[in-house]
Amino acid sequence: MTFNLSRRKTLLALTASAFMVTSLPSLAADKITLRLSASGSATDQRSVALAEVFGPAVAKFADYKPSYNATLFAQGTELEAIARGNLEMTIASAQELAQYIPEFSIFTAGYVHQDAAHQVAVFNDSLMKDFKKKAEKKLGVKLLSVMYLGRRQVNLRQTKNELTVRTPSDLKGVNLRMPGTDAWQFLGRALGAAPTPLAFSEVYTALQTGAIDGQDNPLPTVVDKKFYEVTKQIVLTSHLVDLNYIAISKKTFDKMSKKEQRIVQKAADDAAELGRQRQLQLESELVAFLEEQGLQVYEPDVAAFRKRVQAEYGKSDLAKTWPKGVLKKINALGK
Ligand code: KDO
Image (tube, rainbow, N blue to C red):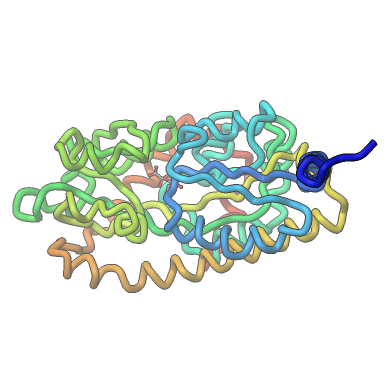
């Protein structure tokens, strides 16, 4: 049988493309897909560090596919998505974990973690073993590393003339947005405010329209999300040295070879370290930036806040779920 040239070309092209169609996906299929769902932005330092460090480090055997601004899964639903096998990775908060494993609320309590180094010491200490095991057993979620979000500060729409915050009683009746889980709402009440649950993605508009009086987040987040455009003051309560865990589906992790697992672990630790250093750097610079934007930034009576917050936690139901002796161990790892 003879073909004319153009027919032969077409056939060759078809065979070539058929080969590509069958061969390329199988190559790609050999790679593990690691979709990460985050509620933070792509410019958040945790996102940046993961994209710069984690993705490239695992690229030989895994496709790291992050999605930001809660576009893949809504804030607070990511752990369940991993548990159901619908997602591979997230940046989880202790508050979200506490919904399923109540004792995680110890890491959500105000004035417990002292700084970024303390968070790392706690995460790597043997006291975390049971917490990590429970997350694996109950949710199929492996906590790889701890990321530093920063010291949460109270950020309000009112000027200092309209509302000066010195002690928790000054926050009475203040409609303070907190993320939407019980542990977060408890923290808002412990600060003396009237907390309102709201998803992170809705905070800017709610501040702009006055649906809320304020929100709390670390300074790098206030800047990254441009909350300073719609607020007037920041009260440096530093009420929570906040963290997130780099979390991965245990099922996905278990499918990897031991070598790949080691690479994933190191990549997570390295990304967390880079993110931490950058976030700390930003925190040290941003008071000046925010003042330039016209915000009033000042310290309240932090001792009064600490006293009230610790007292509220001390007598709370949350504290009843904390394993015996763990708070003491956490404190001993601090300064
Ligand atoms: C927020 O919703 O205020 C919060 O800061 C809570 C954190 O635990 C974390 O989820 C964070 O949002 C997101 O990562 C976005 O920065």
